[in-house]
Each structure stands twice: as structure tokens, then as C-alpha cells.
Image (cartoon, helix red, strand yellow):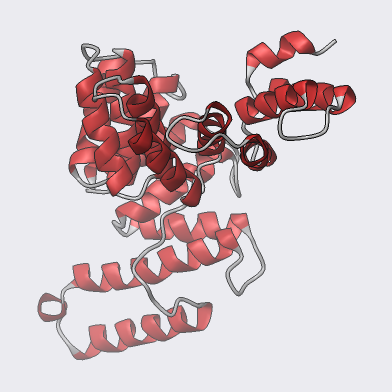
Length: 304
């Protein structure tokens, strides 16, 4: 799960030390009632949050998850909801701290209640998967809705999936498509690919292959590895584009290299049949294995 950065700032240990010196000087020179202790706390939390992100990602410093977690903890304690959400990620993934799902849930809840939409989405995922809490699809829907309403694209994506599957709400493909469009427009590449599938299959929207191709391409361009298999299939089938087996296999390879099991399985079929590539049974088996390990279970049937 990706960490959320704070507002841009020249975050560094020396910059933080300078801020602390200013805070001390101001607190002596100006009565706290005039200066506003809340403002000072936010200022310090802001620097700790950004320092945490730098250490977590190794931005101009040696990557150090333990230090990152420590800075996120300070930011969270000072009331910064993004710090709480990021610390939750560290506990969920066991980065810099011992993995603790219950603690992650506690932190995500604090972040969500503090107005951080990403925290609401993360909390929803925990409830959906029963990690640190009992599974509760009704609670999941409420949390994703809260996140989506606050502008979190992934929250909209996940809420759309709940409507598409009828989990925690009545199944409603039209509503799912609306939410996926909102998420796609908000920059979530996976939603663009998933909305493309709905246009391809005519689920919740009028069937439209050209629109599907456009959305698959947007998903691919945005970094969604699952979009490559879908777009490749359109080229292999000649739907809304000229049939091009070579182009299809190139797309399958990109998806497979990114870890998408379906793309690997499609690439295996291409090697098995010699469509778009030279026929190569050994390579086909290799791709089926990769597809199986990538989570696409039908590929496992081809692996001895």
C-alpha cells in the first residue's frame, strides 16, 4: 500500500530542528493563547510526516523504515491524520515495526475520524478482509462511501466493486459503472481498466468496444498491469481495432512482466498456437507456470 505524503515542504532533520527552535523562541516571546499551541503542533507534525515519508521511500536519505515509523508516530500523536494513516500502513505491512493488524485498524480508524479519506479506504479494506477486525461488508460499504465522497479515488473503485458483486449492498452494475468512472476520472488507473470491461461486456452501460479500448489504454498508460491483458485481447480479437496478433502478444508480455497472471496465460496461449510469436511449447509451459503463480488458477491446469 502506498504511503501518503504531506503537503510539500523542505523536510529534513536540520529543517525540523530549526522549526523546533522557532517554536521554543515563539513560545517564550508570545503567550500561548495568542500564538496558538494547535498551530505549533501542526507545524511540527507536518515536518515529522514528511520526514517519515522520506525515510520510508529513501528520498535523499538512506531508507529506514524504523525511523519512518517513529516520525509517523510523532505526527499522529500531534493530531496529523495522514501520519496516523501512514503509521497504520507500517503496522499492516510490518515495516519498521512488528506487524499488528489490530494496531493498524486502530490507526486507520483514527485517521478516518480525523478526516483522512485514504485512512477510511484502508480501514474498509481491513473490514473486507477480516484483518484485525471481524468481516463486515455493511461497514465496508459505509467506509468506502465516506472515502469516495471525500474524493478518494480508490475508495470509489472499491465501492464500485461492492456494487458490482452485491456485497453489503444490492447488486447494481449501473451504480458500479458510475463509481468506476468517478474513480477513473480521479486518476485511479485500475478503475479505467475495470470500466473498460463493463463497456466491453455491456454491464451497467451500453456495450461499446471503442470506448472499452480507450479505457483499457488509459489504464495501461496509468500503470495498471491488468489493463494489458484486456487491451491485448481486443487486438487479438479485432474488436474496435484492426486485428494484430503481434501487438496483442506485446501487450500480454507487458502485463505478464508486471505480474498479471491472466496476461501470462494469454501469452502462453500465443506461444502454444504460434499467434504473434514463433510457436514454442517450452516457453508456453513457462508462461502457464508464471500465470499460475500470478494467481490465475486456470493456468495451473497446464502445469505438471
